[in-house]
Length: 478
Image (cartoon, rainbow, N blue to C red; front, side, top):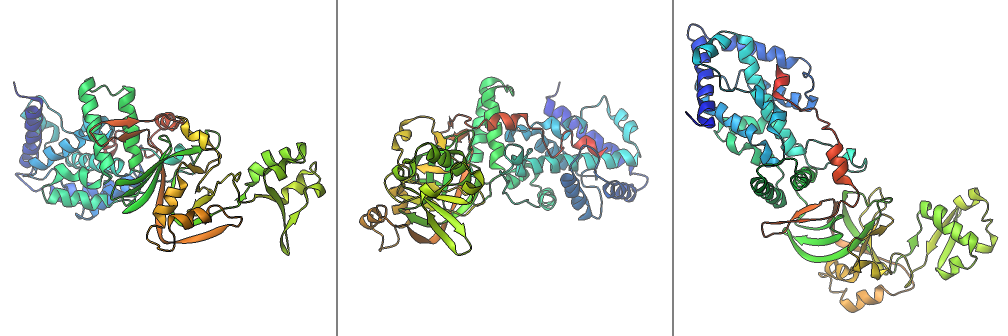
């Protein structure tokens, strides 16, 4: 008795033999081409996504709608296509979601295959479309992800460019390199490949238990790499929220690392990317309106000495600019009057931002900064901020960022951090900043570090339905 692989190979050869036989008396290719053209001109079959169907349409348009896989002599290509779909689990995906059951399977005998297909142009065209659709659906999921990060947090945006899947699939097939096609569209980051390796090892250890929580954690984190840009920057800052850790990385390796404090589960630090361009020494803290209305103003109303004790001044925005306001003149019971005021904490030891902050413009008003609450860094879980990222060693980051500027040595940085006036220093080279959310991270030695799901994003992602509608993709081409 042959192995499963040899039985499948025999089936594929039998299918193609039947197709070749069907064309012995006359060439069916024109009719198959017409059938494919008509079917791809229609709306995407449910539940296939429009994005995948567009890839399918482009794939066949480049071929003038001629079949790709069922032509005589393409036995090896169908074998390779089946192997590609079967490798979906290597990427944390499920082969059955791509219609694996509807692709060529072992059938009773060669005559029955011939009877099944014969000169049935519709079935032959369907087979070609099924294979193409399965590959492109899988390729899109490997490249860009099954789920949308917005399902976890509306502010979380996918940032990976969409690859030309139709063109790359055609090129791989034409060059006989279909087996390696998924590796050309997957995320390029070495951490992705390392998580793949860890997933394969864990599944081997468990006997391929897809329901194991450790397996699911790796699957979820593989997906998040698909939402990141391919180019993080030769030098960049990476803040991993669940690890409560920041690293400046050069060439993919940490050049500077430190602990951080991130937002609470009620005031989460958003996941996004920016470009750091300014260092602010001895900063003012412009109290956000939400904090001013919910915390600062009520505290000032209860305690007349609260503002002075915390070095906070009141400002009023007016047509002639901004002016300071005497706290004794404020009617703390008038909510409308309070909304017209702004609160600002002066530079100093008690300033909520500490002695320095690092700006990378973004719509969330999030930045990295020092903190007077150093005791929090001794804790294991450090989710205590209002959303910004507090740094354990801010002076070390300032020194790193200004290391190529001879005007900024350690002594001058220390002096600038302890002045009574705010000072902005523009960086000569903007530095990419990526705030990410990984609960599993390769440790560099073949293992994986795991971190707490501090915001419950693993749970949300697990519960989120796939938004692209690829399930049973190749059967949708029927």
